[in-house]
Amino acid sequence: MDRLPYAEVTEPGYAERAAATFQAARPAPGTLLLTGPCPRCGTVIQVPVVDGVYKTTGRFRVGGRREPAPSERLEPLICTCEEEHPGRPAGRAGCGAYWLLRITVDAP
Ligand SMILES: [Zn+2]
Ligand SMILES: [Zn+2]
Image 1 (cartoon, rainbow, N blue to C red):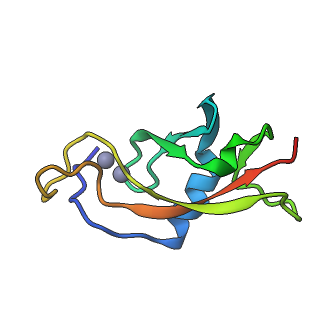
Image 2 (cartoon, rainbow, N blue to C red; image 1 turned 180 degrees about the vertical axis):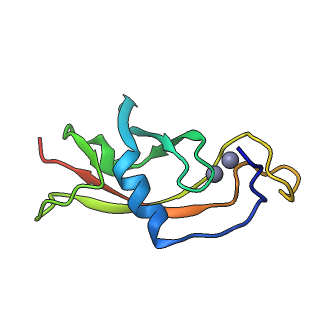
C-alpha cells in the first residue's frame, strides 16, 4: 500500500465506514474498547473509551440505526495507528483522520 501523507482531515464517509466496521467490547467495567480499521489508512486501531455511560449493563452496538435508541452518543475518534505517514508531527500517532462514531447502549 502506498504511504499516505499525514493529514488532519475528515469526510462524511469516514463515519459511515467506521460505523459499519468498528466493534465495541467491554474489557472492564466502565471501559469500552472500540476496534476497527481506520477509514482513511485502513490500519486496525483500538480506542479505549472511559465514560460513565458505559457502566450500565446494557449491550453495546456501534452504528445502530434502530430508533429510538435508549442511550446514544457520538464519540470523536482519531486514528492512532503506528505505521509511517510522511509529514506526521513528532510525537503524534495516526494518519490524522478523525471522525465521529455513533455508539448505542441498549437497555439491559
Ligand atoms: Zn489512519
Ligand atoms: Zn495509518
